[in-house]
Image (cartoon, rainbow, N blue to C red; front, side, top):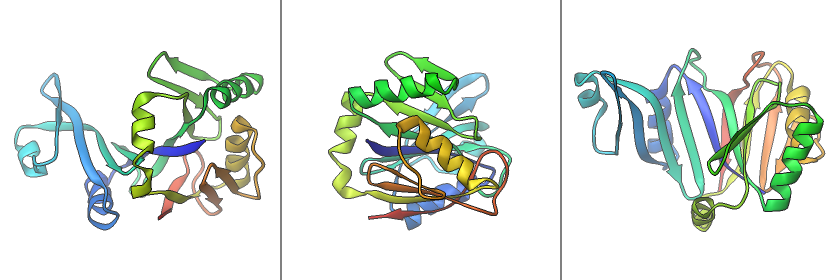
Length: 203
């Protein structure tokens, strides 16, 4: 089990992108969006000024470093909020997670061969994957970066932690849940709904 991806929503996409690239050493994979009515994506090397000049409307920014993948999506909040985390599992762990989610009567959105989402009913989703070649290839690069901690702030940290732990059959310690080698820590004093990002621990 490994947390390899998280998806954030923020009104400050350019500033957050700059933080990941400039401070945390992530690479820009691509920016996805529209020009007119057509969808387009642009690799690194095309500055924001050029995209603005062509009327580019952003949908997503994808960043990576080692096995970690981070996606930024335009939204309403200055402080980034979590839409979902992505967890890679073995076949048995994947089936067990879906069975637990079904027992908990959680909504499951399955896109066969691509992605499966579990709605936690606590303001965020969990993207679960069985073994896939592209994930295995990314995890082989995990020596370049390991996410040791992900800190999130919410109005109900215990509920958030419980909703995450229950899908994987894990025990929580207050607002803490250990997903593989990554400690997901929910802290008090945040908003209702989607939890907001406080920070990451990287090694």
